Image (cartoon, rainbow, N blue to C red; front, side, top):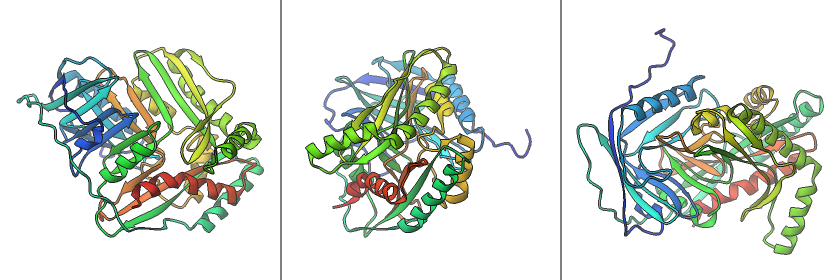
Length: 420
């Protein structure tokens, strides 16, 4: 091994047991402890976990390959007693990855997982091979409310960011690229340490159709499914093209119709769908790529959306498929390499794990990976602070003022979740 190669920790030998249980709170997140909780919840179903039975931290150009290899090694050495037998029972990891190769990511196997799917609820315990943990007594924990939160500009002010958008539009118009996604951040500062369970609960309640997640201080409620792999079926939900809701139902219906006809938004959406379909094609025997998008209605915004589906042609895991898809045009641009270089040149901030894959995977390689959007990253050095993020797709027909307004709309979920 050369000195430049990363050192990958050896996967431990683990014993896993999943069994059905009763008496679990209707809200899975009620069971999360004060610190270190992991969550993946949508419409009340999903998983929450705590403790660390195994962990892998990765970065660099081989980060996805290293993570897949480590997971396969861990699965191969594990002893699993799964009395539930549904996707998500047995051995499961949670994970998140940075937008760029230089941004660190991780896979985490908790010591305890509480899961729910289709009316079935279970608990999974994971322990070293030398011991067999008993199922824990589940208790309900109440989070501390977050009060007195102030928001400040992050890497750039709104005015500066709009100037960057104008620069990007000029480059697109000149033919350098077709689309680029530019992001901005705000800093949330509370008077007291932020109990992450508070905004998590509020996000899950306000955005039940989104995937509410918590992995290593990254929390959010994302509407965009990067990829799901389940029993040979691969699906991906592509979102690109956005308009802010007004709260007036009749007006919003008219706005939805205008979004569905918008040549600028349809162009942006086409780039995103094409990038996903092209990335998944080598892994599918057959695919269904919708010809036209539908309008996805969320409480704060509406998106053009397309659900791409395919039948798996090989053994690529959910994480392997996520690696093939990332970064899609929905979070980077077209052509990918040119857009990524432009982001590095003009965006002016480190995204970290914002707009990277976040999700979970089981021992069979099935799982769900979303794009980390509508999210915030807790500051590891100051528990009172959090960075929250939003981005917008820029094409030739974009307007800097409108794009800034779009990012403000996309910041609403995290701002509201952190507010009183």
